[in-house]
Image (cartoon, rainbow, N blue to C red; front, side, top):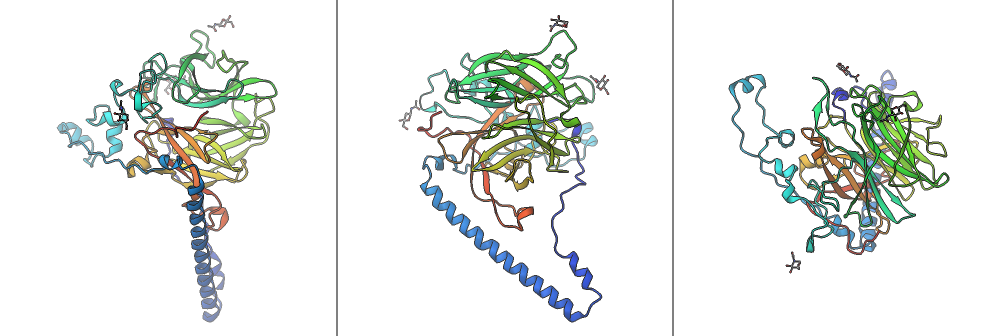
Length: 475
Ligand SMILES: *[C@@H]1O[C@H](CO)[C@@H](O)[C@H](O)[C@H]1NC(C)=O
Ligand SMILES: *[C@@H]1O[C@H](CO)[C@@H](O)[C@H](O)[C@H]1NC(C)=O
Ligand SMILES: *[C@@H]1O[C@H](CO)[C@@H](O)[C@H](O)[C@H]1NC(C)=O
């Protein structure tokens, strides 16, 4: 989400496999052997294609079958809701503005980014529309409204941006950590990205994932000393996991200076999920620049750091040490040359999945789903996971950016996709977009390493204006 590192050129587009270079070797041979080779190749490709179609059909019928045997309550989450937003009439431009920029039709994205747009309320509904779990909401209880202001139990907007959720088994409680951004948005200098001074990491607790109690700032900015946490710096995407051996809650976060040149990760620990966290240090992991990041704790207790590196052109992944307080020497480059950020990792039936965004500053862009058999890679692209809304909703991740994927134990193959709808004009007013994510069905992209055979299930994120977890779901 760092405008400065936007890359327009994707010169290093991943190579797609091609089978035809071999043909040139035969070009000097006889015409006859050439055409035999060509026709055998064509035949082979037709058979391959037919086989892919058949295996697709098999998988699809299997899925229809399993979705019947699955919790029927899930079908409500998988309803496809369409959006039909009317563009406002074009506004009159001053002659000077018209001269500066050649006129082109404004898009929904322009309207989204325009603070004075007539349809701003669609993307940033006013306080009147806020979701207030403390109000007797009647039939509206437990409903998520992606994009609306969401109040905590004290009636204040939740401040946990770029966040993640820890389920604490010891207290059977969910803790939501994120950037507490309730301060003025400004530009540090002409070319600087919109920013809010570090205030700290906010923490909220909940038993039902809807009613959130403010547990305070669990890692606070440093007002005076020139440390990593000095308010003039950058603290983004805090994530917390629990270490069963040391019985400590360990927080990892992106630490940077206002110009995003420090590009480091920071580590903090606490004996309690509600802090206060002790800040330990920051470093460049494995000696590389590191910006958007997340951590992921696997079933076997091994935790991993995943970060955007080499100026956001690729991701790096590597295990943490046993205490989760540092990286080890083991690291792999993944999604090389693909310019992805905002990684959110999850696991389903032994397969690893990840949602990422592109790099376009605070402006929204298209999400991609990725899958891997081994967490260290290779990671495959599976295409855009977004379903419903409309074309522009899907091309902008519903005007939001991934930050975390939360498993819903008790609901098969179901997760909550957590994203941020950034408001660069007033970052504290950025909104949360939570939507159901399910894993199932055939992937829609042929995969590089499997000759087009769908190995993995599709990841789907369903757009809803209003939705809730099935009534019988309980934490
Ligand atoms: C709640 O739903 C019921 C049945 O759908 C309806 O009759 C009732 O008016 C609703 N109440 C409110 C407060 O919306
Ligand atoms: C600043 O640093 C000094 C010396 O290390 C320390 O005593 C003081 O508590 C620090 N102040 C803050 C606000 O952290
Ligand atoms: C950031 O960059 C600007 C302009 O290049 C410079 O004036 C400023 O000192 C830099 N700030 C930091 C914290 O590096």
